[in-house]
Image (cartoon, rainbow, N blue to C red):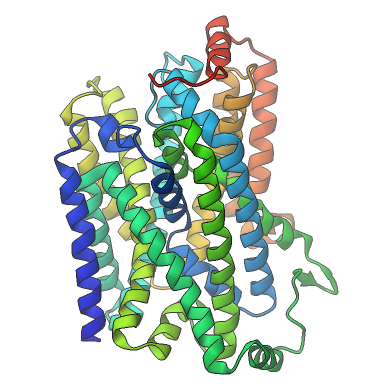
Length: 493
């Protein structure tokens, strides 16, 4: 246990050191929120995927797959949906967004881009989008803090609250100090750790049990039904669960912390290389995460909380030094996502709300300091949300992911690819998508049609609202001209 603690401490010291390194290099908002738009292909890809997957990848997804049959099917189709969504996001959104955000007033946040894209002088889009970002990221960040609490509780025997506060303090320290560059460099390191850790655990477990044949035998003894690829209900494919799993892919188009990576890459021409790197990473890690849950069920069938399977298997199979390194993968996943989410939330609160309401300049160091203070405040609220020790990491992530996908996903796609969209359509689509998502989520307990993942009705409603409101209003010539300008070959500004 002491050895594992030493490995953790060394790792954390490295992460905070990176934050300190970039502290002196963040004098303005472009540096603090986008790293000066200077990310390379590898750094962009690994940072985007590490910040995307979070502690959910090593805790939530394996925990769902651990619930043999229904849970395993849900985990498989969620992974399939995420792979498809990742690819489409990199293929269609990344390059177009990078170019358009620079053409449209050198926008450095999503609310900033939306306001500039639609020439919204009344700042309605900026305020509404910033409010949605703060609301959904509070839930998202709380899921990461909950994952951290489960890590420290399972590995070191700390009580849940102590683990929660400790994990949050670590994340906040380097996020507030170093900004976007620190977050991206730590993401890249953490993405590498997550990749190798996810591969090591299932292969080691299969080796200890005597191979895939023995795993299959043990699983067959745990359930009278075969381990189906498709989710089944009353002898038929459960279409609601299948659609819900695939629906996770829709969320990618509206995740501000992922979209920020596209905006920060050095050149749009580097996107293709980043896409290849990202797809290799995401396919392998998602497959390994599901495998951990399934193989873990055969290896340790009686866990009370399936979301601790990855940690429990490591403690059982590896010596302390190796276990410490593999367990830092969870800390890496949690830190990479939570720091990204805190940074985006801080940017919305400081640049899109504080600067607007108090009429402050967005170019000075004051806004950077407001952002750092916002990181602390948001973290305290997220800790309060995560205080319930029975919190489901999978459930919290699903809630926030769906909210972002419904409120921002259709709007981002239409903004990038439809010249006819108007500011009224943008406002209506965002509000309708977010509200429908929240309503659907609140009705989940009633079952029936409300059992489908809320992102699906939210996404559809937002799309319909954007089209209807836009066709009923008129787009200005200035907006149409800028849209055409964004389609021209890119040249470094």
